[in-house]
Amino acid sequence: MTAYARRVGIVLWKDLLVERRSKESLNALFFFGLLLLFLFQFSLGPDRARLESALPGMLWLGFVLAGLLGLGRSFLAERENDCWEGLVLTAGDKSAIYLGKLAANVCVMGAVELVILVLFGLFFDVDLGRAAAGLAVILPLGTLGLAAVGTLFAAVTAQVRARELLFPVLLLPVQVPVLLATVSATQVALAGQPLGDAGPWLRLLAGADLVYLIIGLLTFEFVLEG
Amino acid sequence: MARPVVIRALGWLAVLALLAGLGMAFGYAPREAIQGNVQRIMYVHVPAVLTAYLAFGLVLVGSVGYLATSRVGWDRLAASAAELGVLFTGITIASGSIWGKPTWGTWWTWDARLTSTAILFLVYVGYLLLRGLVDEPERRGRFAAVVGIVGAANIPIVHFSVKWWRALHQPSTILGPEPSPIAAPIAAALLVNWVAFTLLFAYLLARRIEIARLEEAVMGGALRAR
Image 1 (cartoon, rainbow over the protein chains, first blue to last red):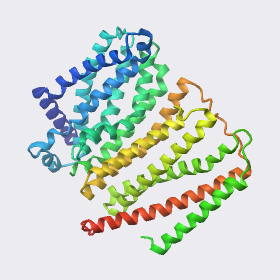
Image 2: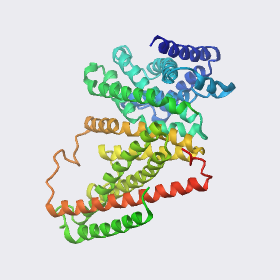
Image 3: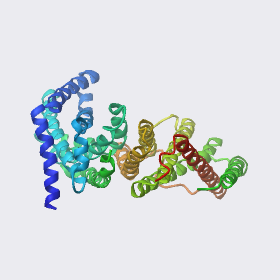
Image 4: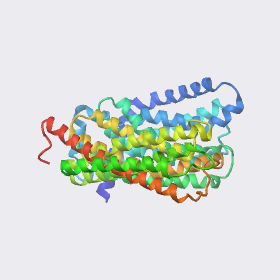
């Protein structure tokens, strides 16, 4: 068990270190998130009432789109310099690699989401203070759901032609429940209502996360074999 | 492996059952009191959706079977069932749309059942796209199996999320919560058509699996040894 946890930690540490040194994903994703906020504003117009009702959806659409770009890249680095063979040859349960990759993805996406969230509050004049407690629950749950399937599918599409196209086409329909649940729960949180009002959605989200996580752990070795 | 004569017999049986179903739908079942003749589209719509669910269930069975045993027969089953599932989901959506126009006054509405059927359609279209993009049969089988398992596990999650999503916005006005009691002749016609569709599905599935086998033989039989 400790060896397993150590392997998870090593993959996580490796990915975060690569990201810290290259800042390949983070820099571009911050900027991409900012760009999305502008695009939303332009496409919806200045009408405050309309904007307000669309805010939770816009926020999560921003997360999902940034997540698509970030997650889709998470296995591309492994294609270079025979890293993939290194992963395949690693001793022990391959699901540890999945967990490490997933943890790294959640960290990177979480950082991007926090920045987008702050910018979102700034540009659209949203009071994030009263929603903070709710978002502190919704954000990790939603990110985990997105990343759990995203990491698995990214490992698949990294080995396939037309991966830029295939990754969103595979991931987005599967993520509809996560999007519905997070948007609905965020709506509750932004309105300043207690989080209990979104209880069913959060339970659904947690259940979905669990299902995705278990499938990822069980099937990852078949994807990695290459 | 079913023998050709059995498959052919299955095909004729399906033809007979479909003719009987057609006869019952138009000749035996009475005209529905409120909707009139339009309601008869139900005899295509409901069997199609039941067949689609059967097909997606078989995709799951084939996917798990393939990952567990690496026997190519399971992969053929999953691939063939997925194609037919998409076909029958397409028939469901199209017939539902044609039914919806005169009765609800619209081709499409974001009703819970419509939405989850559409999402199902998109998930398995992605599955087929993935299959089309991987040339090496053994990898194609593994990757597709992983996506097939995620897709099937997601069906109940999609179902509940979409149901609640609609419930939050507006109560179900079109499809009432209480199923109205169905008159016996209508139920009988529905049953015959359901059996006919299932026979048709079984015939097409057997044919499609046969074609997959021939395809592989033509491609060089690289998988024969498995």
